Image 1 (cartoon, rainbow over the protein chains, first blue to last red):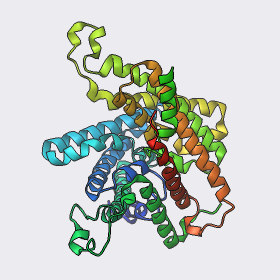
Image 2: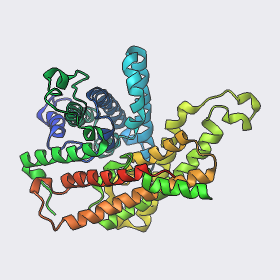
Image 3: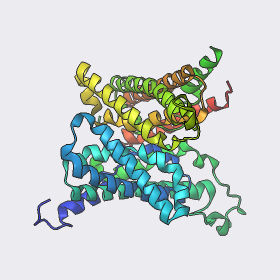
Image 4: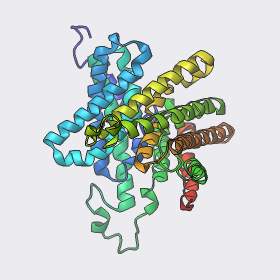
Amino acid sequence: MSEKEPLLSKKYLKLVKDPLNENNPITVQVLGICSALAVTVKMKPAFVMAVSLMAVLAASNVVYSLVRNYIPPRIRIIVQLTIIATMVILVDEILKAYVYEVSKQLSVFVGLIITNCILMGRLEAFAMANKPWPSFMDALGNGAGYSLILIIVSFIRELFGSGTVWGYPVMEKLGVYNAGYENNGFITLPPFALILLGIIIWVQRSRVRKLIETH
Amino acid sequence: MQNLFDIFVKSIFIENMIFAYFLGMCSYLAISKSVKTASGLGIAVIFVMAMTVPIDYLLEKYLMKPGSLTWLSPGLADVDLSFLSFMVFIAVIASMTQLVGMVVEKFSPSLYNSLGIFLPLIAVNCAILGGSLFMQEREYNTLAEATVFGVGSGIGWYLAIVSIAAIREKLRYSNIPGPLKGLGISFIITGLMAIAFMSFMGIKI
């Protein structure tokens, strides 16, 4: 990073904005889908997962970008995974020390974060060739893009699958059960998450025409 | 023998990594455009799983389980290293992946190029870490059981990726709305296939 370039120049802001839509990690780069299916039945775990993923991604992107010139390419995968696993354990320990309640919820997802391909995908595709500050911005952008999809999917699944939003029984308060409405159990099953993601991709691509695949 | 066969069939069909647990989704969706590349990646995954699950089993049994260090000296009976299991499993998987990457690069450069970023991503293919963690959770008794489980899960994954790749090759000739082409329709089809595979769940072996 040159000293003269401002920290929030257009180029860097683009790194944050792009992954929100045109280069979204889930719907365009096809990274991190397993966790998008596993944690999106309810909104709360989805949110916790998204925030912790963003923290781990930012930390490991910066660390890897700092050491990128000293690592022989042959062993880089092991180094990357060691950095990621260390960061995940670190985040877990910090949460345990300061917000014990959240950490209890999170502990289940630790394994999922380590194997979340967004982490390694971004290390491999971006942090390996870029300086720490752009890597940090890239991590923020991709983390936010991931969170966006997770929140959308979990909102729909929780509302129509369990009739609640963030644990609050919306459907019951609206009184739709009395009118004969029932929760759709199928929506809480993983296959529906796949179909829902397919529909989200459909909507996104019909808005951003250049993402349409031609083959 | 009967037992081993049960584990084998179970890990391929009933507990299929993709359709029952949705593990290893990313590379499954991204590398399934043609049957040829898909089967290349599938074979790599079978190989990595067949190697890592038994190795992790041995490490788990002789290093990390509570009381497993007694073969060194009886005084270590109360040492519990199980908190290390993530790190150890990941390290084994990463080194195996690197090995496979080198072999593929050497013998089939064209496959190496078409797999691109997804070859190193085998290391974070959740199916593989998932395989090791399931092995740990289900407490298989012998090395043979763990090996059969690893191979079986790998074959199940291979089966899944080759079948979606075959379907996608045919889809090229069908009239799908533009924005849904490619990734979108693959998601929906995977969802439908998963519903079909749910019918296996009732089978008890």
